[in-house]
Image (tube, rainbow, N blue to C red; front, side):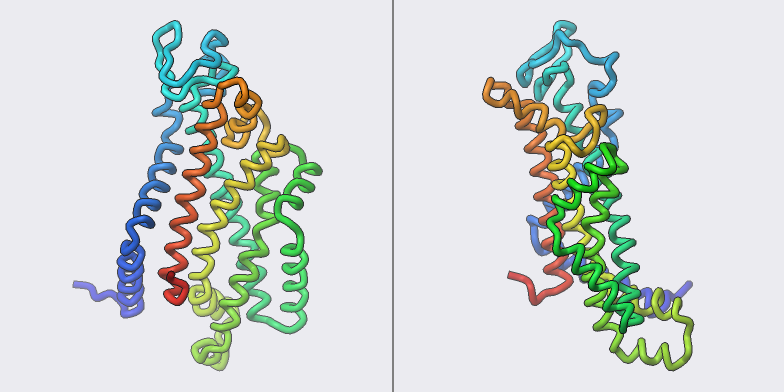
Length: 300
């Protein structure tokens, strides 16, 4: 019978306490379940939707502008109606949600990696390196995110990869600032000073001691920034500078239906807007609860 190392046992005990604290909020647990459900249906969209809304061979112009719960001439049911091109709105929303989640998670992951690298280097080495990197962070944070993203996409053009680059460019500074603050606190602790006195390699001090203990605040920031990235991508696509019209996007669906709102075809923009709102609110609720769990002093 194997005995787990004390460090592993302590980590598992901390995770158990963290989950119990998280589960004290029913709203947070519900939001986490909703986020999990949204991710599941988005990933399974090609298999559970009645049609591929971006496959022209599956569309019929005779099915355009059908109201919710209508049926087509061949007997197919459209629970959320169709748009001006005859696309099933339920299928289009699930495909759009899939792209929105992918863009949000991908941009957050890349920005997290870049910002963590900058923040850790600044906190560990200090001095002129810290000053130069933090001035760069301050410069980035001084500009509105939407403005920087619009300028970058005007230069780069449309595309999912371009949108991710723009989102990374406006998000990495948040992680750099957060990880630097946490790392400066850990940098002055005894175990870091002991590791340096033992002449341990810098790589080991940073990756084995400094980074794991300074990383938890980034989990909260990353969760909130996923929702921010999704909202920003939808805004850019709504303005016509985000993903191209050949790609599914909740922002594009809302923009496509916006012109039909006054004519009574509310469902073309309304249901994609509801899906976007639910995703953003659910992710933010999870992030807020994580913040409260990791820093009990912030609990209301």
